[in-house]
Length: 141
Image 1 (cartoon, helix red, strand yellow):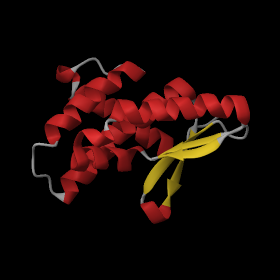
Image 2: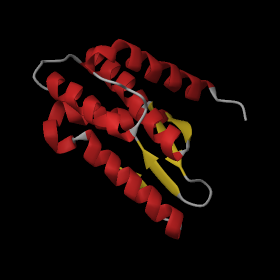
Image 3: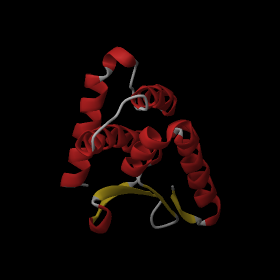
Image 4: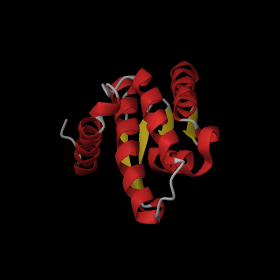
């Protein structure tokens, strides 16, 4: 199956993240690596960040989170025009669990610990497991 342009862009951006932040930890696309991602975002909470920089960080870190999800649980990317960002949908057609990682990264930087990435990702994993059992459909926010 051929990868979409969107998928290739997200993979490329996620791999750039792993290279750019290799001094901060081992970003191997494991679920455990999201703890280090959250540590980086915690550091960013201390700074005043303009919207362009926030968009850039949300895209780069969000792409990494997307790829952790896709590589571990599968899924397909779709572009959501009215939100101007991608969504990853896991489980179709048997079930459907969607995540908007860019929004979550932005929220983590703006809101602090209440939007912690590992907690968010645990919600995604739990929803995928529930979907496999029952055909559950949800968007994790």
